[in-house]
Each structure stands twice: as structure tokens, then as C-alpha cells.
Length: 338
Image (cartoon, rainbow, N blue to C red):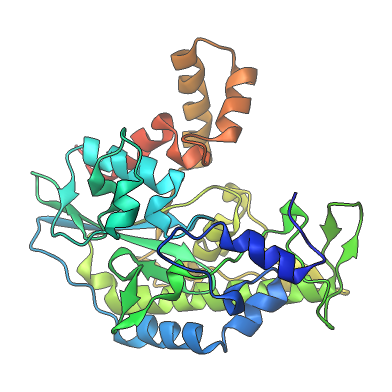
């Protein structure tokens, strides 16, 4: 059970998500939408956002085709050591992609890697296959907006905040994305373990959501010409997909278009609302992809749809459904079109 009312204890729980040799920065523990909005002025986050918005340029090898692949952030830091990223990256390696240079996470993490994984799952460089397709991986993550894989550990000679933070503060449905100790908290405890957001949580969620989507769009508008395809591998219905999709995509993706605050509504604006009509970020998997994956999962396991749906919901590799083989088939097909 997640601690909610004792920030000091919750920070101790957050520290367990950070893999050694990296360490948690307690000032980057963001447990509510209000914490998230405040973080935009944090020196480490402000420096990162300045870098990623206005200075960062990808360094990519020669290729016949270049794909920018956005991956979801994970509670485990650094991201590549998470169950989800290990499963996704292993599938890419098994599909013929390989690192373009030796840019690895520390040896200490490689030594703890499970034997079923190649050490290349912890490589941070762009990947390339024999057909000349390069995959450049980035992570969609609040409060940094996006994190290029090659800068997960450092940027501009500085430690990256991406290995030192914990931010469960935008996940309303979990019932614990609150900071009751804040003067501007309007969350209400509805049970011993669950809290309901109030107006200030919903208002700050919209502020942070729209700040992240604007930053994401700003970067893509500036560097998108480097890529032939831009794909976000993010779960339907969740916040990271909401950061990406535009107004006309929300209903089909089962994503809210606004947050109710008081008697009004604050619109949720996605990166695709900011980008030119001909340059949207494609979000996968689609809802139809997910339905098909459940059917194929049932066939693989020799079970019925009801049981397969439960297994699907629990995800693959002790992660989310995005790591299931049936959904990774969809990703690989997009990355390596026939």
C-alpha cells in the first residue's frame, strides 16, 4: 500500500524505485498535479526543459529510414532497466536491430540483468537493422516532457533528472496522486487508501498536461525533419497518450477532452493540436490492435477471451500490455513495414 499522508515515508518508498548506482533526489518527488506544476520552476527541470526545447539536436547515423519511437516512462529508473523497456528492447533486438555505438548503462546494472536479456537492452544509442532503418528512442515523461535515450544518464555534462525522480502525481485513477500536506490540496479521502481529486488537483492536472504537450510539440516541430516516421508506443486511455493526441482523436482513443474545474471545464490540448496537420505523431497500439491482441493471446494460451482479457490487463513481463508479444508484433510491423 502506498503511503499518502506522510511525505517523508513516501519518499523512502520512492527511493526503492531508483536503481543503484543512481539515487533519488527528494526534491523531485512529485505526488500530485500541484507538485508537478511547481516542478516546472525546479532548477534541474527548468534546465532540462531549456535544453530539450531549444538546444537538443539528435545525432543519428546514416540510414535509409529513420523512426523516432516514443516509449512510456516507468516507475523504475533508469527506464531501460524496467521490466517494460527490457521486454520492448529485447523484442527490437530479436527483430534484427542492434546498437549503433557503445553507450551503455553502468556495469553495475548490466551485472544485475536477468540472463534471458541481451546486454544490448541497456544500450542507449540509436538502433539500426540490416535494411538501414534506424530507431531513435525517446521517453515521454512528466515533468521532463521527453527524454532522448542517449540523455537518460546525463546532458551537457550534468546528471540527468531522468534517473533521480519519482512522479506518480498525474495518475488520478490510482487514488493516491495527492499531496494532502499542501496548503492548496483539495483532495478528499474517500477510504483508508483512496483519495478523490478536488478542483485544484484537476486544474493543476490540466495546466501540467498542456505544458507537457506544448513542450513535446515544440521539440518535434524543431527536430521532426530528421525522421521519416514518428510513433508513440503509449497505452490507450492513459495520460501519456493524452499528451500526444489532438482534439479529433480523443473520442476514438477513449481519452477525456477536458477536466471539470468548478462550474467550468479546462480543455486538454495534445501535441498533435500544435503540430501541422501533415505532421502528427502516430499513437500505437490502436484500440482495434488491443482487441486483436487479446484474441491472439487467448489462442496462444489456449484459453477463453474472458481469461485472456484478465491476463492482458496485468500486462507482459510484469509490466503493462505494451510489453506483451501480441502487441509488440504491432510495433515491429510499424517499424519494419513490408
